[in-house]
Length: 154
Image (cartoon, rainbow, N blue to C red; front, top):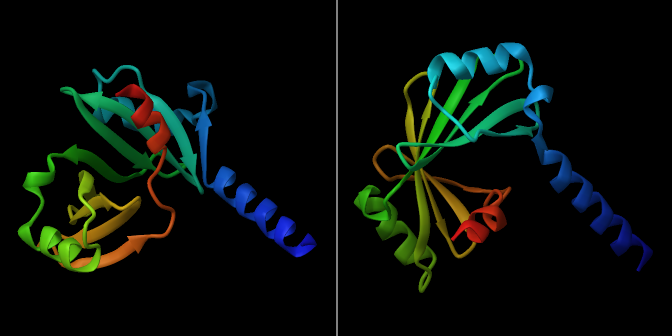
């Protein structure tokens, strides 16, 4: 019993430390400057720290968008919410076969600093990552991020 409690405490600490909400004043100037140069008209920006990276979440043209920078302000990737129907066909085929009976709840297009595109699809409470052609890459071990926040907005 004692071991179970210790494991649960460690899991909670790991989850909490993985993504922490930040005040804008806690974000390094280099990160804020890089963000502002890329998205000068962005407003209502929410900042989080994931591991050692800074993530800005905002809406651009009414589309949920997030952009990630390292501590020096170097751009890492952008994630843009997309309609499920715009995912590559292979994504739907994979999930139909491997997660039967579960619908895709959310989808996103992720573009990294090199221009590499991947897709993310949430089904059955798990995020699945795919390459640009819809080939399965991996399950996201962290699971959906801040889905409670998103669900409370609806």
